[in-house]
Amino acid sequence: MSPRRGLDLPTIVETAAAIANEHGMQEVTLASLAQRLGIRSPSLYNHVNGLPGLRVQLAIWGLKKLTAAIDESLKEQTGDEAIHAIASAYIRFARAEPGLYELTLRSPDADDEEYMAVAQKLVDMLVNQLSYYELDRDMAIHIVRGFRSFLHGFASIEQKGGFGMPQAIDESLRVAIQTYLNGLRQL
Image 1 (cartoon, rainbow, N blue to C red):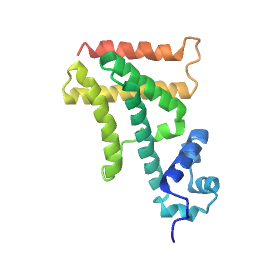
Image 2: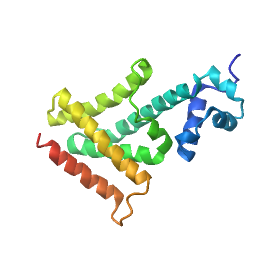
Image 3: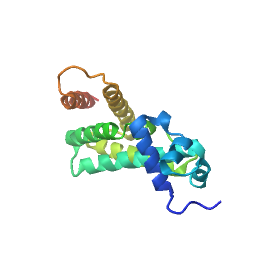
C-alpha cells in the first residue's frame, strides 16, 4: 500500500503531539490520530511502526524541540546565568507542550540510534554548560541527573496545580535554582 499523498511523518507526529498536549498522552491512539487526520488507521502503518513507533517518534521530536528551546535560551550565557536560562526554557517547554514533555522523560532504547543521538545531544549540551564549574564528566553527569530530576519535579507539581500559594512560581524557580547552584559550588 502506498502512502497517502500529503501525509508524511512530520504531519503525523505534529498532529499526535497536538492531541497529547490537548488531552494527555493516554488519548494518543492510532484511532484518535487517524480520525484527526481524516484517514483510516491502517494508513498510519505506512509511516510508523504502530503506537510504540509513534511514541518513539514523538519522543524524538519532543527532545529536539526541548534541545532547541534550551539552545535558543542560552545565547552566549555561561555559569549561573546559563543554568537559570536552561531551567526557564525547560519549564516553559513543559508548560507549553505538556503531552510531548511527558515523552521526553523516558531513556531512549539503545537500539534506536536516532533517539540515542538526540538524547545524547541534550545531555552533552548540559554537560558542556557545567564545564564552567570545573567538574569532571562523571560528576557533571550526576549533576545533570539531579538538575533534570529537580526540574521535572517542579514541572510536575506545577502541572498538577500543586503551587497554590500566592508567591510567584517563576520566582520560586529562580530561588530554587540559585540554591541548587550554591550547593554545586560546595563540591
